[in-house]
Length: 179
Image (cartoon, rainbow, N blue to C red; front, side, top):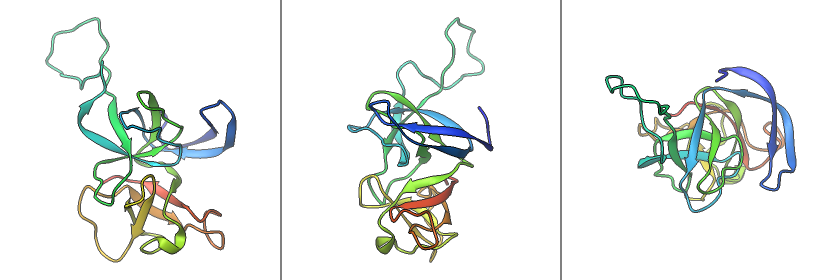
């Protein structure tokens, strides 16, 4: 795992066609099994699915007897779909089909994330907290009050919009910092 490294990155669609390439600074990457009913598109927020751990996966138990089976700790996830979502893992770095494992940019990743349209955001300020919204697949942001613990995906580092921001009306530039 490379942490905090700026490296070449290429996003590809489900058909294998590349639709973006450039430099991306990733933080901690997680392998997440999509247990949702839809594909999690690249650039959407991913939350943990409570009570589920990927089949064939377990957390290491340090005092367990040794076995020939490797210990793999993959988490299960779903796309953001509610303002009440908690336990964010990060932002999908690739399309993650249902039942498949994909990479999610976690703590420390600098990237864009799909958001509500800039005019619909609670506010569109650098430094705002990023959290779920009532629109499936999109996040909202607010800097007027400290959020409830557990609902934060990260912090806005670049506003949505063409004038001064990400050049996209529905993408916020964020630093992923789930808490």
